[in-house]
Length: 152
Image (cartoon, rainbow, N blue to C red; front, side, top):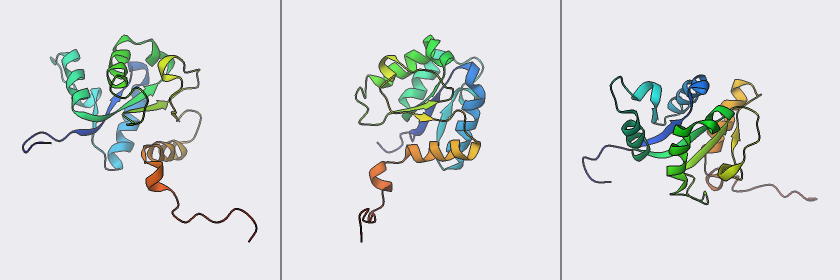
């Protein structure tokens, strides 16, 4: 990053109108945990060019959170958002896509094999824990001295 360049947001939240409540909740959880977030309902203003605002949000964010539902998968705009990032990380090793399943449905296509975080059908505390734990690098959070599982 060069001096004077704006800081990249940690996450851009991609969602469809049907999942607006999930977008609000997810943004709040992430911000409460100290992350920076770009989300349409807060950062896209009246008279903005929607497509250009999406492009700026994608370019200005380190990772893309997908609020996956059947409505999300039917949306052309959300497909454009996640596919732009998928192109940069097709095998998922860079963890640029953060797929959150907000309803129970069969996820298929290119996103089908991606490991996702299920947030549906659980209480809020469980959903919050799953979200925040899922963002952590498993190697950074593993027990450095696991107990021996056999007989002592």
